[in-house]
Amino acid sequence: MSSLERRIRDIFGERCSFSLTERVAYSFDATRQRAIPDCVVFPENADEVGELFRVARESRIPVVPRGAGSGFSGGTVPVSGGVVVSFERMDRILDIDEVNLVARVEPGVVLGNLQSAVESMGLFYPPDPSSRDFCTIGGNIAECAGGPSGFKYGVTKDYVLALDNVLPSGEFLRTGVETVKGVVGYNLTSLIVGSEGTLTVVTGATLKLLPKPEHVETLLIGFRSTEEACRGVNEIIRKKVVPRTIELIDSTAVECVREFSPVDIPDGAGAFLLIDVDGFESDVKAQVRRVKEAVTSLPVVSLQVEEDPDGRESLWALRRAISPSLLKVNPTKINEDITVPRARLPEVMRRVRELSEETGIPIVNFGHAGDGNVHVNIMIDGDDPAQVKKAEEVLREIFALTVSVGGTISGEHGVGISKKPYIGMELSPRQIEVMKRLKRLFDPDNILNPHKIFPD
Image 1 (spheres, rainbow, N blue to C red):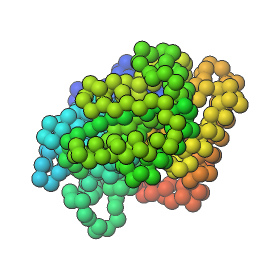
Image 2 (cartoon, rainbow, N blue to C red; image 1 turned 120 degrees about the vertical axis):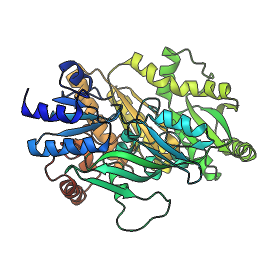
Image 3 (cartoon, helix red, strand yellow; image 1 turned 135 degrees about the vertical axis):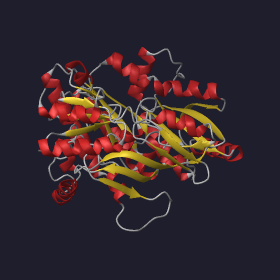
Image 4 (cartoon, rainbow, N blue to C red; image 1 turned 135 degrees about the horizontal axis):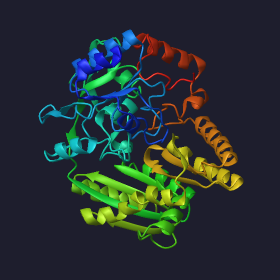
């Protein structure tokens, strides 16, 4: 046993593993990129994380925080080995405060468990990535996770009031306050949210809650084409309606579901908007009427409205069937999450379709059209080097188009290692250098999740 292993075992006892089997299990995320760590540890409190950092600094070994490994950017992949810190044992909801409308949680709390707990008390935590049944609050904070409800309710950064952190030095840092208002000093909490686990390790969070909406109705509107569906989004916004969600399902996604899923799809529709409207029942009814009015100027093929849970779920079945259907088309894909100003969505989707036609590479698009966030799935044969190269060229052109219209190359997934080669397309050299200085300030030894975000 090495002295390093002995010191780690002194901190964690049986809650650490050096076995190859367990190290492999913590070597990858949803990107399927893989790098095997030297060990995995399972802390139960912040003190243990601080002790680990003191050992890591002395030994110059990387420390990589991990939630559920559900990310799409390689952010938790231990590219330089070192110690993976899994927070699955720090999974307590410490408090739900109905008066101050906050929840105090540990980072390993599964998002869906938190949402169920607060909803049982008539409260609401809006961020809703599709992985909510297994992703963790710590991972959500690291990536600033969003989801379909982001259009109306915002994303994770809008709900994090305060954080408990451990710095790479092993010191503890509390940031933020447990009130909505608080402007003393720099907003360090906002800096840490979305920093992809590269500045601090979050060991606790105070989250803002809202009253749970009393009524929800769902609309599924079919259009002839993706471009017409995108125009439908803009017409709805012009009517001053703010739905909880406006999801786009493009023509290629519809074709995949038709071929590989038993979901019932209205005939004649080539693309869909899936819309949730929530609030007080009378307000919801009025907003649904306005949505219908908004799309009357467009050639709508079908329009369905449901308000009971089973009926609403039947409409959402189309959206939920997309990813399983894509796996049947091709298990290899490049999954990106561009975000563009809503008004530019029709032209961006048109150009993406043209790129697909020009190159012969299928591109399937779906996602959160309400806030301009579209998941662009470039379907490729990962074993064909020529096709992979062509797909990377297509991706670069899509990113260039996105930036040219004032958008961003990542609305939710983050940079990690997947988008490192592309950040210079969006950020200036000065922006990147300022960010690197911040990284050095927090982590002068570069031991916390190194080789992420910035090109080496």
